[in-house]
Image (cartoon, rainbow, N blue to C red; front, top):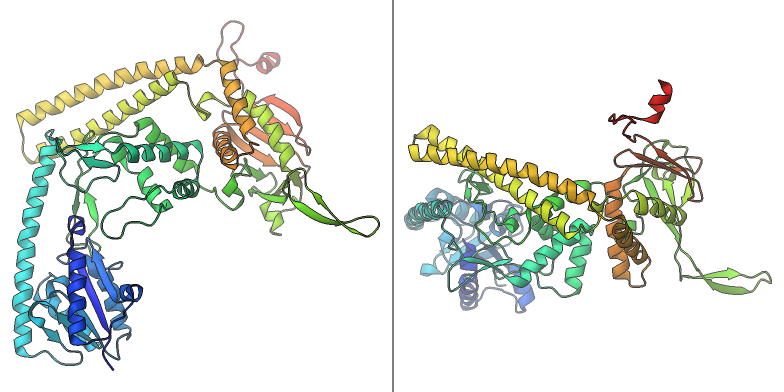
Length: 577
């Protein structure tokens, strides 16, 4: 019976992944297996289960032998006895297993052979047999080759680090040439000028993701939309991602490179995971900006507000009050329960005993305290008819209480907001520059550097003065929003809540839900069937009965200007006086 063969292949950098390194290693190893007559599957699918590959992982730092690495997985299986009956691991050369010196190389070989694995290398056709102690000649070979590989990697690491530091210094000094072919996925290198430019189509996808997210779409909904229309996912190397996923969109939404910022990283040699760490420098306008600072900031605010949302009922945004409505008795969230859907066919028994069928004409769903529903420490068993409540709450809130920021702002308002966000980002980056300069001056004083710090401080003061004026402009523009224009936009969106097209209906409902989270401060459902809502600024209180009818509308903390111009005057206080 022939011995089963496995292959291990690795390359260090993503740049190598664009070439044929991995394919060449696997092909050469398969040829060796065929020559030796070792057992190896015929079908490509089964062969992939025998091939262990690490892409973009350095053997000099041992990243491939840390959790998540393919060699780590193979060593784990060997230690657990998976290859006790014999196996052979074929590699191109010992340096594919490690470049950490002869001690590590000898340790890997002895551990693998002790657990039933024979190690075969292509270079020199060497063989370290399972269960056999290596002879002196083999040990010397390992020491000589491993030390040579380690020194070569060490020298290469120093050259690469020096070259990288030189590139970073040039970028800080104003150089805008692309430092690498590996760029954020929505960017590419302009062949003529050698600078980073935005890929128009991919940049439009980035903007779509951000805009849909701040409008209220969840990450799973955006992923589904991109995948269903066949939008190719982005990736590097041989194994590109199969379709879009929420993990990648999360990284995209938190990546400040979309605003043009470049933060050089360095890697610690002393951590087993070989993680990247910031060098403490941010270059604000190195990349082309594809997302405004205002939109980026709104996306981060949306992320914070999304905690506690989700669930099956939210997949179609059936419940506009998800995450908002709570039980007045115990504080638990109100559970949304759909009892029937319009258009559903339901069988029933007629008075004469015969069987019949009817079509439901309306949706029927309820809100109920989740604790009471589960029989846990709450006596509020009231079930509130959802459809009545939604219709009447929207009548009161959408036309009376929503501020303009909950929906698409007018062009002038959006322009001022964006300008404010960009200037705030500029100030933050300049302050970071000052911190870096202060650290530099602490090491060695330079008159030129100190003068530059003074210039940056003057720029910060000037920008802060500009911000004062811009914020005043924003208040003015917000005050000039036409009520009739606002009402028209809201009513148009309201009509789309029941649109026949499910995509348009869903888009409208997520926007309204997102808006409600911005304007409702509290929403409580009591055991007598009443629902109390307090607006976000606590200026308006609404009470609805069990049929969803508004039975009370109060000015809770409303402020008035007194007859003599007194601020924070209230008529109740006047009567008391």
